[in-house]
Length: 325
Image 1 (tube, rainbow, N blue to C red):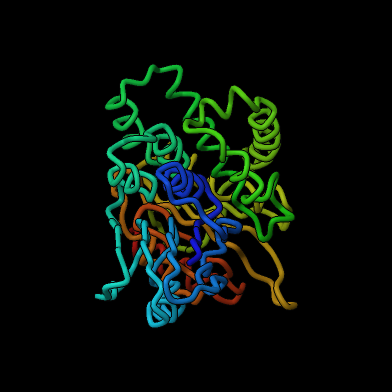
Image 2: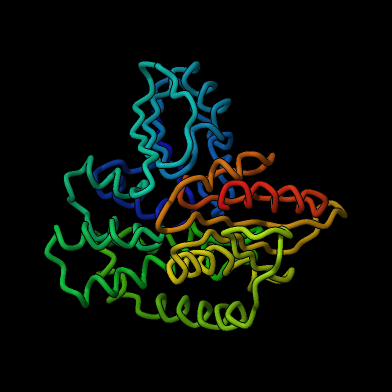
C-alpha cells in the first residue's frame, strides 16, 4: 500500500503538503509542478489500498482522474479552496473543500490539525494574498510582528517562485524547494538553517518586479470599466512575476479588478497567459470570468487562464467589463 502526496507548486500547495507531511502522512510518491500545472492527479499510478492526499488543486479540473482512482479502490483526501463543482459522494473520498474567498488550502489543513503547524499556514496565506486571514492566524498564535513579517516575505517569495510556463522559468523547481522544507516543523527554522534560500529568491524577485513596475496599463475594452490590464512581454521574468504583480496591484488599488497578460506563442499561435484579480473590496467573480475560457479556472478572488489565443482577447475584455463595470 503506497502513499501519494499531490500538491500545487505554489506557496499554498507546498505549505499545505508540508503540514500533512509533518502530521504523519509520509509519502512514497510526490507529484507537483508549476503553479498553473493543475491536472496533476492523472500522473498518479495508484492501486486498491493506496492512499492519496491532494492539496491545493481543483477537484473539478481533476474529476476524471479522481473517478478512476476511486473506482480502483484508492482512498483520497482532498484539501482545497478552488472551484470544485459537484463533489462526488463516495466512501473513498474525504473532501475538505472550502471555496470562500478568505481561506486557502493551508488554512483548511491548519484547521484540521488544530493549528499544530500554524506558521506554515500563515506563510501560505500571505503567499495567496490573503493578508487579513494570515494576520488573524498569526495573531491567534501569538506571533511577534517581526516573525509575522518574516513569514509574509517567505510566503510571497515561495509563491512567486511557482509562476512560469515550465520549471525552466522558475528560480527553483517546486519539488527541490519542497525537499528543503522536509526537516523543518516551522518555516522560521528553515530560514535560519538555509539563509541563502531566501536571499536567492529575494534577489530574483527584486529584479523581476523592477521590470514590472516600469509598465503602464493596457486598454482591453473601449468603454469605461473597473479593470486595469497590464501586458507583459514574452520573457521568463514576465512569466515568473505575473501572479505576484497582480497580487500587488490588487492590494494597492483595492477598488478595481486587474488582469495581467503575458505574451507568448504556442504551436505557432500567439496568445497570452492571464492572471485575473477581483477587487479586494469585492473579492468575487474572478473564477467565473476565467472559467468562460477553455483553460481557465481558479477561485473567486484570484484566477487565471493558462492559455488565451490572441483572437479571444477582445472577448476577455468584454467579459471583464461586464463583470466589473
